[in-house]
Length: 323
Image (cartoon, rainbow, N blue to C red; front, side, top):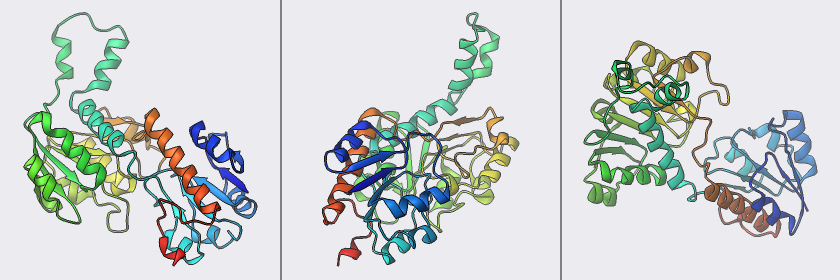
């Protein structure tokens, strides 16, 4: 059968697919146009998608040939899952394997923005460091130890992120859709509502999925609840944050800073946001470690191979279609 991979993924996944099927890969960094996507849906039996591929109901209605959509990500808000289920197209993802790497990146952003790492690194790289002196006062940052850490969405990644705080003796507050007794016991953490978390936390880290309920969860009102000394970290999904409201909050000092790996209009990053020096910006690299990306590629390939054998894929998001 024929498999199409919409962007370059680690070779280990492509090679696995090629053992059994014909595989074509879009080696161009630019994504497919809507017309190109529609044509692929007519030609291929399986498509490996990435988060920037928007698969809506209209495209799915013309996907008579497609036997599986394998999303190369844990999130799947780029695919209309309800429509795919109605058209009996299995959709899969790659859960679990990127938990630690994404949690680690959230900590990287916390350190970077709180300790002004990008500015200090650029200062040193430019040859401006001439020894200890008054000029280094510009890089005074904030401690992480003994502060209050707010975790919005204590799922797999959020819980892993919270567990990494143990060496810093932080007070942990978290929100979750269900009780987390193990997290509370191990970290002396406390589950609370969003309002209390925002008002009490020195660092607020977002780990919730993007749903209609969480769209603009962090809006102007939420940002006003945060301490003026607090930092916002987002490695979840860009639209969880009202980006225009965040820009205003960073400009006016409503919050101290932010560390972002995802953006509301990704891949576009507003010029106003890029001009601010109290925000650290990364190009959506939460899962970007060699081991994690290789395992994601293998999982995506396994999902495709199972579906093309007529089996339910191991990471099927809509298993009801097999009932």
